[in-house]
Length: 114
Image (tube, rainbow, N blue to C red):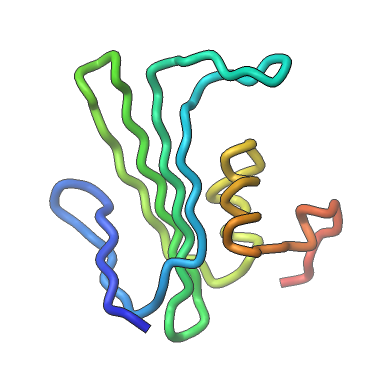
C-alpha cells in the first residue's frame, strides 16, 4: 500500500493509505453510432482501495472551451453501492468498473443488501 493524496479542490485533499485499482479517461462527448462527438469536455475517473477496506472515488472534469476550467470531486465510500452512486452508470464509469475489475450486484440489476 502507498500513501495517497487525492485533491478535492484548491485547498483540500484526501490523504489515505491505499492503491489505485482502476482509471478511466475520456471525452464527455456523446456517443452516436459508434463515434464520439467532441464537446470539449474531459473527464478522469479513478477508484482506490484503502488499507482499511474502504474506497476513495475521484472525478476530475475539465472544459477546454472555457479556458481549461477544472473541477475535482472525491469521496470516501464504505460500500460498492456508494461507489456506484458516485460514479453512476455512464460509459466512462463502466470503463472504470471494468479496469478496476469492480463488479457490483447492482450493475447486474440486483440490489445488494449493504
